[in-house]
Amino acid sequence: MNDLFRIYTDLLGNIIDTFLFFRFMDNNLPLKVKTNYKVILLSIYIVYSLPKEIPYSPLIILAIDLLFLCFYVWPDWKSALVTLIKYEFYSYLSMSVILILHSVVFNDLGVLFSSDIYEQYKLIIIPFLTYTFYVLYSNYKKNRKIRSHYYLYFSVIILAVCLLLSYSTLYICRREPDSQMLPVLFTVLIILILLCISLYDKFLALLVENANYKIQSEISRLQENYALQVEENLSALHSLRHDIKNHLIIIDGYAVQHNYNKIHEYIQKIGAHFKDTSSIQTPSVPLSAILNEKEALAKQENINCEITCNIPYLKINDFFFFSIMGNLLDNAISAASKCETGWLRADIQQTESALSISVDNSHVEQIQENGGVFSSTKTDSSGIHGIGIKNVRKAVKNLHGQIEISHTENTFHVNILLPNYK
Image (cartoon, rainbow, N blue to C red; front, top):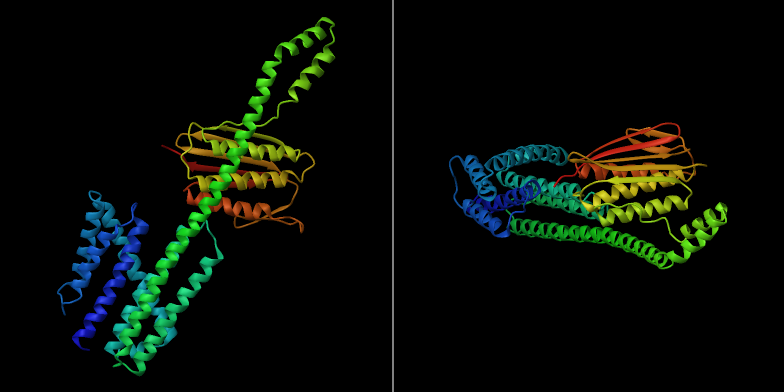
């Protein structure tokens, strides 16, 4: 193996390791690493690839990574040390597992220990597959709320191309280990895959932006409806205040006649001009809007609905919180609407540094539970509890909260605790 090929493999391997390190930092530190800092560290490793043999190379690489982390998160050196330990543990463990599986699938252990060139390509492919798997896994974990089928398609394509790259490279390396075209082909394919991963990140960012836009549009719609309801009630109140003198004269006339039935009827007639809306007030206008809309929807279904809210402030992520409240109340309304005398009780309270959400509703379906997954035994059921509760669990987990679910023959209960502090 000539010195130029050695520099090529060391350089490519160090670049891939550095990309994995950057991705790990972005996912485990509060702030993303700035591009200029990435360029500096990448340049250091490019230069580091040039010498033939460096004593204590693994220790030097650890020291460089630790210094870089300390510089970036200073003075929180403990966080830098913990991040480095996690990274080393993940990289060595995942690379070992992928190396074993890859060698079993390709059945190349004999070639691996007998060919230095083959070994060098293998030692580049394994970190590259590790980087690819980590990118796909971390993006899936960060963007669980999207659940787009495009994500699945792209992940399968990326994995297939990476496996094809490893197979074709090692196959050519077995047949023609001295081929001058192999390094060029290998480099081009890796660059193309890295570009695809970069486009994939941008595509996911667009999906997240689109998802946030949809939830913001829904919140805006709720706010507009809420504002319209408030305006209608205020208009009715102003109208009543304008005519209050005439109303009092009429009521006084009925009182002189001791006609209490007419007084009662007239008061009821005046009250009918007011829509029973916008009764729930919270520190968050979007929360007030969604609670009032769900309350109105429940009353349209002739459900006895009581929603109380007593919180001084709301510091919870809008997307996940409104997903929780929307699913919980939709589930409860759907189940209670199937009862002859359906009812729904919801209570939101601040308890120390946590937000307590309690929702109870009536139901007539026979509910089956399997590992926290709920389903109805009715064949015509929409499965609303099963789907809705699954989404609620995901949102609660993303907010680092706790959820407890219980049910009886005719009652379904959900209690949630979410961190809510300034």
